[in-house]
Image (cartoon, rainbow, N blue to C red; front, side):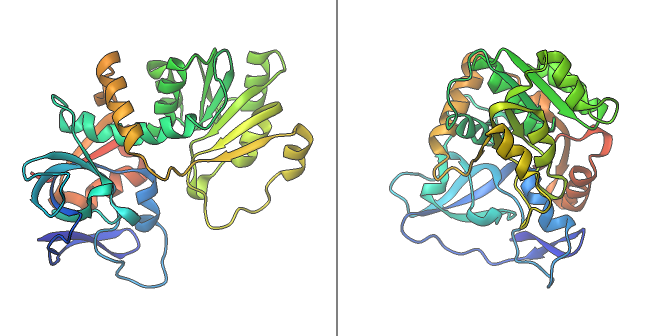
Length: 316
């Protein structure tokens, strides 16, 4: 069996890896379709103290079929969404606990099923917030997650959804997913743009959907109105320096984080929403590579080549 292994900064190779037989409460999933996420990229793009990294890093948005099971809840042949712990899912076959599996609804194609995983993280985060009906929301970052926030916020009754991104092409995509306004932060001052759109009130809620080395917390603080909420969704670096805490203090802001303990109910909610509302999740897919070209897949996602949004990996 092959697994992906990061052997140096920006270098990933396919290596032989043993397949562990399932213990009680586990199953073996043969991977079919997966997609890369922003939280996978730091393992690939950032420098680490020692190489190679552990095999299997990094992948966690996965759909496949169970080929062996020691779980009473799943049978051989079941199609499932798999969510491995620690993002260690970049294997041809993955041994995983049944508490990290969700059986696919009938009629769901692999692409739609796997893209429901990031949508589920968005729904989980939004479920922690008070009523959104009539609110003004700024979504900072219009990559795949930011676009899914636009989509979900529009269905939850937000009155004004302002998509903000430094890349003009990404900023303009927001309108296709429910954003009412788009702001390209490299062309205009986003603070002035939001101030003009809101008559000076600024945003009731600001979603940070950037994260990692490009985190935009200070920019989010600037976009907030009095007593607003910041939903810090993007995965932060180990340390945040030079945060504008005084401005946040003066505005009486609430900063919320979101790391769901159990995503499975929100996966099912995402599937139901996609099917009932006939949402074309395929609009997020821009690139597709076979598993043998995993290096190109990671490079394309990291570098946002050719407008990359969701980069898919096919194992079959």
